[in-house]
Amino acid sequence: MNNNMDSIITRRQSREVKVGNVIIGGNNPIVVQSMTNTDTMDTMAIVEQTMRMVEQGCQMVRITASEEKTANNLYNIKNELVKRGCDVPLVADIHFNPKAAEISASLVEKIRINPGNYVDRKWKEGFSDKDYEDILKRAQDNISPLIDICKKHNTAIRIGVNHGSISERIVYRYGNTPLAMAESAMEFLRMFNEMDFLNIVVSMKASNVKVMNQANLILVEKMKEVNMSLPLHLGVTEAGNGEDGRIKSICGIGSLLAQGIGDTIRVSLTEKPENEIPVAKLLANAFSDIYEGKEIEQDAVATREIADSARLLLDDKIDVDSFYLEDEELTKNILQATGKKVFKAEFIACPSCGRTKYDIQSALEKVKEKCFQLKGLKIAVMGCIVNGPGEMADADYGYIGCGNGKVNLYRQGHLIHSSVEEENAINLLISMIKEDGKWVEQQ
Ligand code: SF4
Image 1: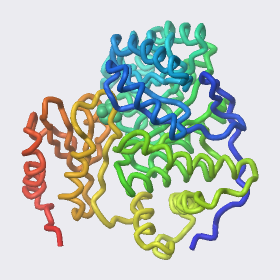
Image 2: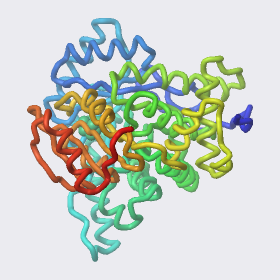
Image 3: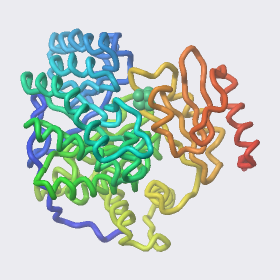
């Protein structure tokens, strides 16, 4: 058993950021949030799903706003929610489209931008520091109208860095590393600081628990160096589903909460978004209680134990070979989630969102059922061909729905078969694994 739980954890002091009627950071309890996965143009479907999430205890709801028309529809969604007496703060998830960001910033309480998407020129070998500064200057000019809107409407921004979509200029300088993720956020934090805008929450997400953990720890130090204390949003991306997805999320998020780091969390599962909330609440409540010096509820004890085990394993404070919990399966899952030992195939799968054009939940079940025995392989099942390929970059094989009942199949990030009929896709994936000599029959 793990007897290394700290009874007192000193919480990192972050500044408060107000998002509608919710405050993130400071000494406020950890905020639980999630994201809808239905079409943003289907107002009623989004509203119904939001209501179900809020009923479970979700305190902030993110919605895809990838284009101007979907951003504009946030107005109808907001109105319908208000009509039903629901004032949960909404967060618009922006990809690539600055205009959608500007529209959303005047309609909802918070927007999420990915610094990796703010690129106006491909980074080339041989670019100088001056080129780098020029690119940043242009990014600042491009983003300044958005900041004016956010200031006017008291809209908060999340700078959401994803390991799978760091800008080339940053990868060129720092490699594809946790440090690169932290630097990617710092670029934008310095920019926003200059514009006197600090209504910001920051996240560093990766599907690899170790990378996510390290990126957050580095960012905390980098912020400290420049006297910044912005609140942190924690999450493990593409954690998958079921027990594996839950353990991976608790390990990543919990390992940081167990060090007093983190102000809002999202557990991403390839399931209905409302399924994410009970797990997230267990984590958030347990650590909010600990920070306040209270006893944690009985049903959160096991969650706390997983979080602490992950913290110690990731920090090399326990010997991997002597680590065990009473539940052998759980012990193995924690060791695999923290990257310390491998017992089975790893499935990377996004939670899906308004961009998803197929039934990713049943696709993931199908792929898992056929491939779980392939110990050591990483297989990704992703929701869209826009962000999926980047986000699953370190997977051995990828299975991505591309709409109209078709699937694209990837090997080591390279597209091998495109627009395969969904019913044939699993067999074609198996043939690819066989061709590579990596197939093993189930016992
Ligand atoms: S990869 Fe998944 S979660 Fe990310 S944008 Fe595509 S469908 Fe949405």
